[in-house]
Image 1: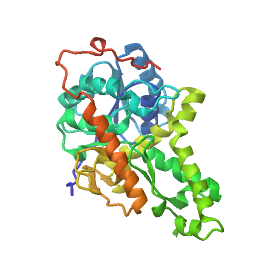
Image 2: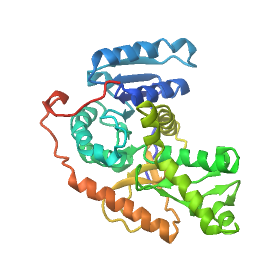
Image 3: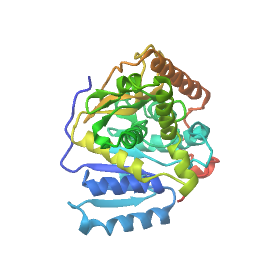
Image 4: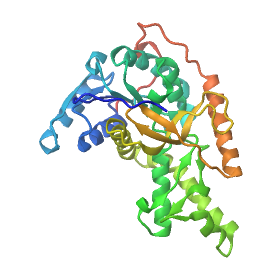
Amino acid sequence: SVPSRDFPITRKVTVIGAGSVGVACAYSILLQGHCQQLTLLDVFAEKTKGEVLDLQDCMCQMNKRIVITGGTDYALSDDSHIVVVTAGARQRPGESRLELTQRNVDLMKIIIPKVVKHSPNCILVMVTNPCDVITWTAWKLSGFPAHRVLGSGTLLDSSRFRVKVAEKLEVDPRSVHGYVLGEHGDSSVAVWSGVTVGGVRLDKLISSSPDPTAAMEEWNQLHTSVRDAAKNIIALKGYTAWAIGAVVSQLVDCIFHDNRAVLPISTKVQGLHGIDSDVFLSIPCVLGRGGVVSRIHTDFSADELSKFKKSADLLWDICTSVDVTPLPATTSTADIAIPINKN
């Protein structure tokens, strides 16, 4: 159990990365009024200045006064309570999240030490893909306790999952409860045994259908569509942004207001479900002021548990294959071959 803590009246959030995802996160946080100070950082000074000016023009329509700053200097982020990291190379059409790994790991070697220097007591919320490996990397580089480093993980996958189930059953998504766990990516696991609709277990409905095998195959196709959702959106418009922005805003709200909501987010799962490595992947967690307050033990079916462990093994193989050796303190993004996205 992680002890709760109080935040000062002035709550500060820094978003690192002024691309489509970073700006969507910043905008969602501003719309919900979750902080009093918001800082946007990026290596592209003019792009960042333009986004800050655009966001500042929204202030008359916000429900509170929020001071918005931005630039390239990490000193602007001094004493942030939450730091959201979205910076990274954009996923290309047809590219898996795991293929992004080493170039974004190298970027974290520059970003995370600066975050630690300027906001040593912050909670890190990692969004950069591949999310689970990058969250593990941030934990390794920061030296923070694991409960203060979390990834957005499969929170977005689970939201998509609930929407798809609701569409199929023609009900409100808020009446559907269920999770996609494991990797935020191709090896994610739909936990069918835990899905309920209005308190009724979905697997009971499936087993009572005239052809349970065919019915389950249809539902599995639904999970496939959830898993491939980001790829399809990227193929159509080049990136995803708005949904992950809403997800990050929800995480910020839970932390600042100590909501203790149970959310599927990427965290260290060592010691759960027979996993011995310090791999990060998504499980249901209680999220509050201290970050990850506690981890929920999921009652998987045998098949789901097997898939979850395979997901953990896949991610751990990636973690052990990437180089997380810290770079010299003077290294900048110009010194390493990382195509940072300006858009």
